[in-house]
Length: 399
Image (tube, rainbow, N blue to C red; front, side, top):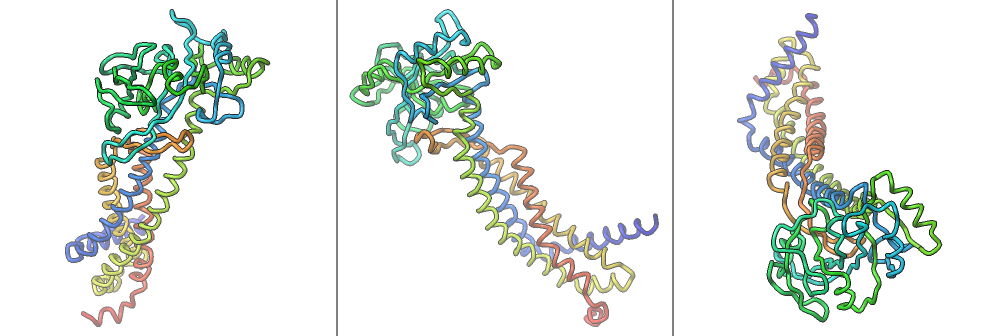
């Protein structure tokens, strides 16, 4: 045991001497630490946008709910259903029921332009025509201000996300949509789901306003249980009167989020790689500087019997320590700056804005620390090799 213990003592001693010399190299050390912190902050911050977007759409559906579109359509924008089709769907025995009947809502989806509160630029905001059961179909739906719209009247309810992001969507105000003015009667939440990005109106009134006749684009439905989905789907897709596609809502919204999530993740990773290259050079510079200023110290320790492996490991540990400090700083900045930040972005599959909050998850923080560790290892490797290969005799002549 003496050998391993002796090596550990040597590593600890050389590492301690290196860390104690940091104040003399504080400029280069600070540059390396904050360079790594910047990489972690940007990486976690950008990826938290994708995590928040996915979380919002994931919260939009539940396993015991389904969405029905026209056969061949992959989103509401490209779907179309007539009144008879929606009637047949709502007669399914697999649907949950309450005192109003089947918990299903035939819905119309249109897009209107409204200015963003932050920039004043116009954005595509979803306006959804719904039936009375729409509130029962969505889990966690809650009116937090005002009241629901009255059927048959030009009244609308606004999701809390849309109300915070787009101008003019304040309770009691009137906005002009299509050929009519609409009174905002209520603000609602939906458990953080995408419905909070929408404006809701009575479907029949919206059909008249946009001259859509008796057509809809989707039916949202609550099933008796999650296990009833396959039976429900089979009954609709094999019915000769219908030409529809049936999705479990959780699967539908997961697919809706895939394009944006992949794009954000790819861009975030690319930016982090480019910044990481700069951070690696910063770490290399710092550790080469450390080895250079400690040439005589390292040579003296080697002359006293300290092994090359102890010197190599100590330089690597010093580099990792600085990287971990930078990683912690970057992770903390990302959490306090980005987590919970409200914004909106375009969902390219519906061509409308979705409001959501950045979500800095533990997985992202761990990923950021892994990046910091990798930068520290690369940045310390070559200086560690150089330190181990320092010629003892020539270095001691500098004493």
